[in-house]
Amino acid sequence: MNGKQLLLFTGLLAGAAVSGWLLLDQGVLKEQPTPSPGGPDLFVNDMDLKIIGEDGNVHYRVQASRLEHFPYDDHSELTAPFLQVFSQERTTWDARSERGWVADQGDTVWLLGRVVINRPPYAAQRAINVVTSDLVVKPQADTAETAAAAVIQSGGYRIEGVGLLANFRENRLDLRSRVRGKVDAGG
Image 1 (cartoon, rainbow, N blue to C red):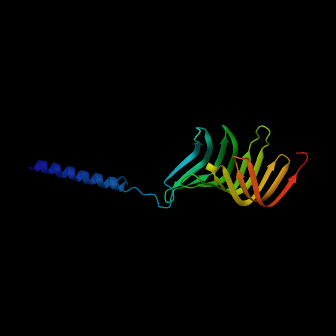
Image 2 (cartoon, rainbow, N blue to C red):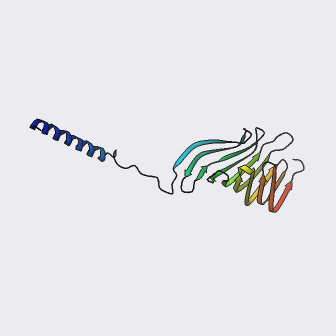
Image 3 (tube, rainbow, N blue to C red):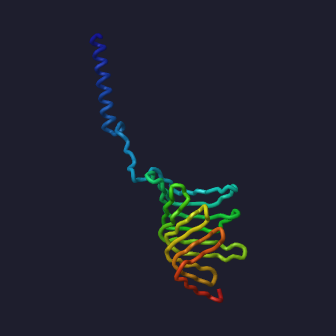
């Protein structure tokens, strides 16, 4: 190798070293951080999920302003979830809460904090409004349950009690204990 080639080779080597140093200094070549083992691995804003039954119709729908998935136990956390249960292509029940938690397979949904359940009026059925908290929903079975206090209102009646079992498929609400009611004959 002659002197010019050696000088050119040394210059190229020095340029590569300086470029690498600059890239490293700017963070381009640094290792990317890995998510913490307890933190979320993905999130979705303005989630709208429709679950289709074997008949090809929408069985239920879950909306949330935010969903975060946690891989360590494969659960998801929901912000402001809204759950709708469908029957024969119409909404039969819906439930809204402050936050939610979904098990790994989606077979159990916890609606946490204040929960409001509604059944819209349909045919000869009046609208029903239920206020409770910390509701465990089993979407595949169309049931929900809580051990908390619940208030059921429809038309001219108001019934309150502790513990609620809801069967959305059968349009049935059962209060478990300390049940009291008030009926307004004019309502």
